[in-house]
Image (cartoon, rainbow, N blue to C red; front, side, top):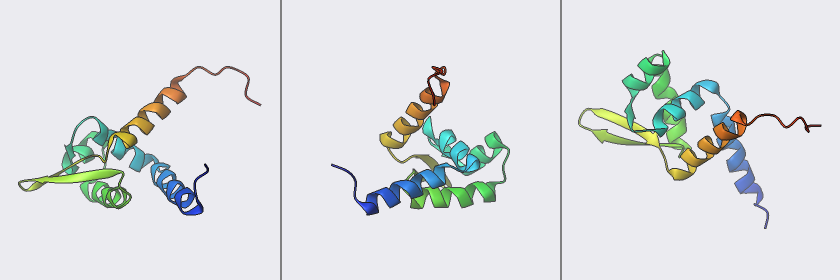
Length: 102
């Protein structure tokens, strides 16, 4: 069974969002444990407003989720699928080249 056109379009949008290096770094920062905007900004040497902007897009795409704790909002990967895809792709790029690419 192949995916329908709507599913393919959604998947393409998801990969487009993750194709931006800054957004990808932000998502990777959220995979290990919930993290606050300020901590993401500090860890990645970005402004908190830029991080917040990207997090809004990522949350709308269900790539990250947020949880308010007091005055702070913590972000984490939306689910195990997101973490798994990123983990698998990082493993893939770490594999040595077989030299059989055309």
